[in-house]
Length: 309
Image (tube, rainbow, N blue to C red):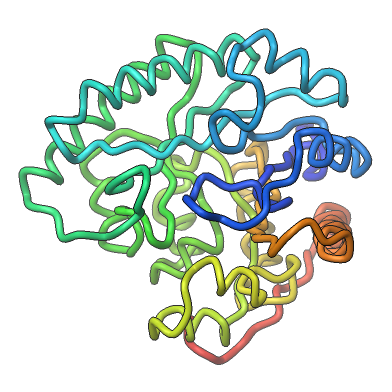
């Protein structure tokens, strides 16, 4: 018998507003984030932006251990479409993978971006897409050499955002997929359809919901991603437009040993204790939803919203 859904749910620092994206709001301290994770009963976490936690593998593992945590993996933004930058980026990936492996991680999560200081979505040439495919093959090998698994993460605002881009990489690489229920939805993918067609390619699941009204404003270009997040783009699980209950039920049937990550992107205006408390309330509500999904033979459906996302 497999472990329970709650026992396979890890945390992520971005749920507390600690993010890789440049100029992403107020960043809490390591102690504030990890002590909260411990209080909520998490056993594993993702790494967060490189440098948030100690960068040495043993120091990283020791820091997490003080809070009863171990490392599941880490999200690593990389520039992999540019041949002139590829060697530097692969060296960076190698170094991070080695440190993650030393800390006991299982997953190396890549996210292709255009530039570390300015995430944009310039059109890519066929040669650049082919370069990305080759880079994924190299990342697969780097991860394997360190005892890790590699999965790519479609992400709104990054180079792999929409459904065509996600499917291109699924069709042209052997790399596994991070099924991020919200970022895929924002990019026009149907997470349930991906489960139906590519269940064997799913490496792990990032759980978050989507507020359809805020998403519509984001798609119209009225607000930035960070402002959208601050306006509630990612509500507590079960309170948005993603049918998370049905999705989790299906995943637990076809892939019952998958790891999930509660990854509710947040962006803090500043060091306001009331804002931090609101983040904690969101985690509490989301954990109650996950617990209900794990206990019920028919998990609760996410609230459906007829507005387009």
